Length: 327
Image 1 (cartoon, helix red, strand yellow):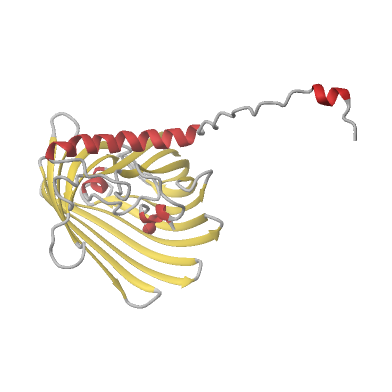
Image 2 (tube, rainbow, N blue to C red):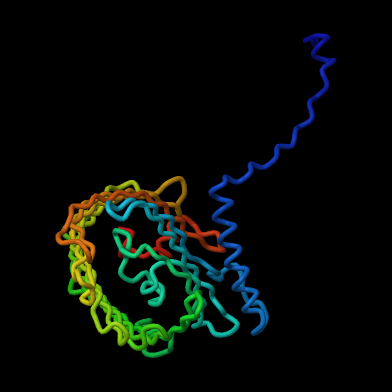
């Protein structure tokens, strides 16, 4: 067989090196946040011993949420929630630091606590930093201690003691209880109480009655929030919730600020650790100076990103999410 002349003249092409694909913007953002937070934890921890972080260590982790919304009579408001947990292994394996922005009561509890379906009525987010400690009392993590400060002038430090209890009546029914006792410079002594009753009515449906109360020496009144919710798993990383809610403060002129019905649709977007949601609702709302209530429409969108300094495998993010509010 004779080769064609031009075939012999053709030089063998050199394999061209292909540059690795640049990570998408959303991946770079998530990694930048995680590495910045984790670097801060390691910098502080190194003053108390050798760097003992390894590939198996959890490292710093947390979540970042952006929740713009429109509430009739209050206008457009933005809520930015940020929470990061920073392990301090060299000091004590039971100790961690926390930095967060959001509702101050939720942050002082050092966990997700009573998660608002609709934005808080004040719309004022605060920055707090603190330390959490799990004492070796018993065989569970029911008890925790904490201390921190709100980052505004004048500084507003706090101390807290929390107790959590979870009881399963059977495979479909449970009660969840949490009590936090705190001292805060601006409020003196006080307490937060949350009680949830849950019933799973089918494989994809769950009903929850949630109640939250707060009292303190400074206000001598009760701030409360209660709702009845139906959670629906829509499969394919999608979910929805329909809720009836009421909230208020016994120390206000109008003790019931608003009550209404709300619907939230939520789904995973693009990544295992990124979620989007849409909120719509209608409430009977009243300001202290109003003679009667007015019907108020509510609409909002939101995005939430979970982050970790380590590369988590698919499914591991469930350990970082609060299942109570993520359905």
